[in-house]
Image (tube, rainbow, N blue to C red; front, side, top):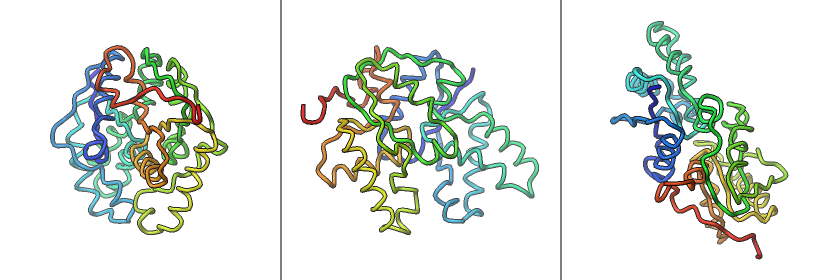
Length: 256
């Protein structure tokens, strides 16, 4: 199987450790992913702002770049969903729309690919900590990927997963939403942080880089020293992970 890894902008520029962890985990699962040079934004921010005409050139570039592979794996539910939207961008271009449909059918979110395609769920990961898993809006409501990340986390030795009262409540980011409606965004974020703190977990795990960055920033702003990790970093704590786990460390229970 020819597998390529799509690197979202936030992973490329802000949290490269998540991308390295994805590479390690995929290799541990028995595939040797290629990371094509010349990757660009999937166009999601522009799409959410209504600039469809400016998204099309980006979409064409992504379609061209990933045309020769069997599967595209993406460590972001929102970017995965954006690529799956590409066919609708070309109502007057049947040839490009057909290529977009082909790409959409071969594009998988990271945990979805591991569980539903490779059927590999145990990487020998070991992370003694209590953790909250945050369901991003795109992962949960759009892609319906609730069970897959939890199944993977259930195989991590030492990890105790604690469910907050509303695990799928929005973290308040929402891409351009947080800039256009900062007051609402901040209120949602504060509610999310409080729900996390109420569990007394010491680690926050997420499969969506943008949500993770938002939650991490809010925790830092409130001087709350919780560890924040992309799920790939957790899975990379298995044998041979080394630096691929990106600093994932055991943490004692809050107050312990």
